[in-house]
Length: 436
Image (tube, rainbow, N blue to C red; front, side, top):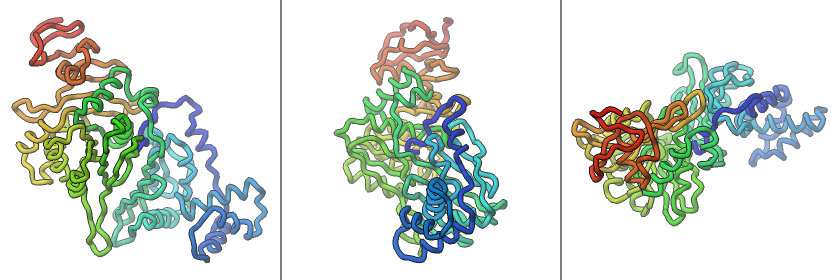
């Protein structure tokens, strides 16, 4: 994700808008085809120097600036993202979507925006999709019309061909940025304030097992990568992902990536198998990039057998929906609701929920995972809304586990009293059944 989801609002005219104005139509089709033919006629890697030589040999009088632009555009057509390549220059762009030759969109953290890029037609979109998928070692054709691949350079590409896509070839590109955002940068972008920052730091420091939940594009991978960078340099981090996106700044990181079946239908390695292998690698921190299937069984089992400080992300619309998601994923692994409840209640400590708002991506709440007798629940400890952080029923318990004073936050939500504490009403709070 990676640092792909950290961007917040940017003052106009934004960097992205300035970058978009720089997108140019590029060289004509004749020059492109001539250079393509010349470069691909010889074996060997397609490099910028070979493309430049082919452009010069074409005899076109383009001038210095024109030649450089032609080399860049043609290189993108042969080895990059084609017409989409100029959009990648904007460091705020996290996703690019192609819905058709004249319908290209991008996301810079504030919702979708139309991009000033067009294709010559459906054939060009399909050709780009097929080339990108082939570069990822897979095939995109009528027998395999929906494909997801990861490319060098940090791109995750998903392509769909007609007639599965009724309107033409669809292309989705997720950009993994090489730079991981620091907590300071995420804070300046508006993801959290000082108190939530301290809570996140303590969750890592105190080795609480946690899940980061949220919708697609809410910044889960970005925040997870940043938090992993806070782990002690003496710890061994083993990351397990379906497609490698995490790139924490840490001296001891081992990454395992699942593998799809090959053309013969064999060779698949799923996340569950990788979790089992990771347990034999003596991890100090076991991280699953995204819990999306039966691997949740192995992850919960690992957390319950001494692997504290583990973590991952999970898709959920709200923090309260996380237990239901875990139950559904556990069913895929053959676990019943009671088994998931017992495993998750003892394995997971905290749930950090992210949301996309008009102000950007933000930490919306932090809660504790509990079994309240009737089922698995996420009890709210902190809730952020309209720039204010309010305490929830589970705040005293979380504060005690993190070594923070209960009075660090005030708010209108009723608080429960920790089992080990006296029933003393803290300033700014009122207990259930009392009046403030």
